[in-house]
Image (tube, rainbow, N blue to C red):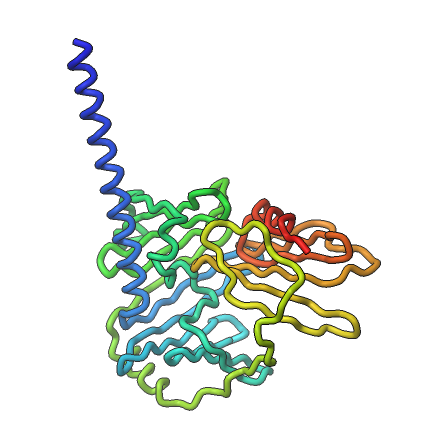
Amino acid sequence: MNKWFSVICLTGSLIFSNQALASESDAEALFQEMGSAAQNLSYEMSFMSFNPRSIVPVRYRHAIINGVPVSQMIQMDSSRREIVQKGEVISYFEPGFDAFSLNGQNIVDNLPSVLFADYEKIKPYYNFIDAGRTHIGDKPSLVIRIISKDNSRFNYTLLIDEENKLPLRVDLLDNNNQLLEQFRVISTVLDSKTVKDSLVSLSKINLPPLLVSPKNDNPAFKWRVGLLPPGFEEVSRSERNLGENDDVESALFSDGMFTFSVNVTKAEQGSLLDQPIQNGRRTIYTMTQGRNVITIIGELPLPTAQQVAASIRF
């Protein structure tokens, strides 16, 4: 009896393990399909971007024109801010300000960065979970969850159109499963001739000049970060003068989905930021270490920002 009971238990555990592996594999494959659809299909998407301080209505168009990605994003509120991408140049137009361009791979303003994340780069640090099927309005959708393996960063729940694999809703969640931000699609138009024709016309316009940053060839700092969440790497550093005897040294870090910066200045008399600030995905945390003020700004949970700041050595 004990022998057969052990065999039954072992068989059951193997079945459960295989189902879990299959579920994770399905979620990973669906995530890659969503990224491919968002970056390669021709479509127009109207959506709302929600965070604790604002609700932004947006229209986004995307197509591949002659092998080059062309996109247009317009905020549909009173600001009428417009962003245009042509290849690796992203241009910003806003009433009352001079237009300018930056180098970049994708428009991420108001779009969740998870749509453009490199699966191979983020896979070691996140669990991908198949959470079944549901509906948004009359749209059947597939649900996956992307969970930080070590709780050092935020998590996502994605609802993906079952038919075209474009996102329908993206929830950004903290480690207590509390909603921080939400991206919710109102309507999607796929393979529209009108949309593609408008982007073809857009691809022919001259974009404003690139914004040139001051030359600062990888400055040497007298400090280093001792503890980074796994997968985060330094992608750039800079040194800026804010006034007489007032410089700020900054290093930018990314794991391919979230980014944050470490900023160091000299301490002066006066009060610091009394309380950390958490606004959606954005955390601002300041501490003093000796004669230096350390400020962490970016897409990190507060406990992680505190750990990074405390690990800095001069």
